[in-house]
Image 1 (spheres, helix red, strand yellow):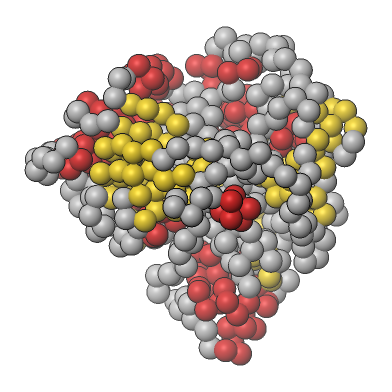
Image 2 (cartoon, rainbow, N blue to C red):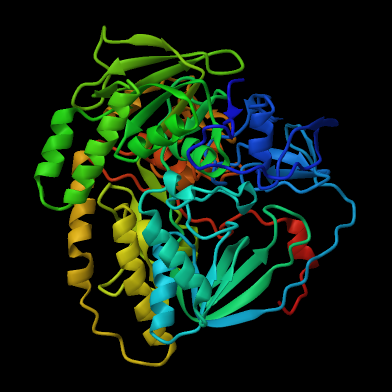
Length: 580
């Protein structure tokens, strides 16, 4: 175990002294502070695993860090299957290890009743796109309800420290802090915007959304409806990870998890950390790790410098500010003596109960390891990220048509005003294609204004969407060309490599099922092999499974249909009043 809480002394954010909270882990009192998540408490107290898998009893802890993968499930106060990365501790919490599949407790739980709600415009998600949509919708005259599962606005991009940490200089952890702080103030003071934190939307039926409010995964959160005249979906995305031998070992994290723990909880995932993957997001991840005192042993960019330069050169003037950012990150890496290697990646992780070392290799132009280039490197943590996958559950449930985004992944199809193919449903941000925070904000503004015009009974606005988003969409296209994901990643894994982390299905098992039954689509594979049928419902593995099945040159078509968008306890559904 190597994760730790950064000492307050010398912290650039000047964290205060949050109050101590009485918490036990497996019956023993531990050090805990207000504002910490269950995962942060466990990691800070020397625990990087706290459950075992149902099939092979493998240890698990934090992996994605944002509630998508379900790896970090733990039992809290006798209630199993609580996502440790999402649940904030309270005084008296009893955290216990969760071994295998645990049946729910039968004890009585007080139900928190929430009255039905309605609004002219409902915005789902409070990241850059959602905040921009809420402000634009309110400025256009609509009553806006902004719903988000976090405790504060900002999403993953503008992740903040908990208020309980009393940081005096939070701006030092966030780029473009002044602009974000101004947006936050405008949103909180706007008379036509209502903000619902810690609220998850788990289903959508036409323009009715079903919600639960309260601490993540707590029992007794009665589902309640929210009716809207227009809906803006701004649900963001999560890290895409490609499988390699050992990627399911404790100590392997997504890049987003490493940054979320560092920025949001001041937790370093390790003493010696390797950052690997592709895309400019790896740079701020390395910055966050350095900020909590980790030794970043290397940053490995899978694409060659030639590929990156060629991609950006297709539209060299698309984002001059990003060039300045890159220069700044380069200076930071040089100052901390972090080697940046283009055309390299991690192809295996080694260890018994935790990562102890990795094998890295130089890649050819198709991302196949160059024979003889393999190197072994001692590390105690690895964070990986190969782009992002959009959170499409609500959009698919709303019957919105999908298309292929600039990066080759699935995305929601929208018109010039961000209207989807479903009347009254708008989409903005990473849902419509991975393109960064600036594009997300621009699309959010368009979607919010268009949704408000619809809700107020006006005609479709004549918004100059081309002028607003054209440059930023050009940036998204250039980004995809500069940081493509090549098919050679399939050569990193072997028959024994886990592909589905939840059901522990290996690549060999997938290929056997596909060969014996002639299956060629993700849904059929899910039903036949169980890959994607686990707790995360294929969020982590569906794109991988689809890519492994796709013929050369074909566009993979992962199964994204999940009628229940986020975890809901059956007990809460059963106790809901029939008229709801």
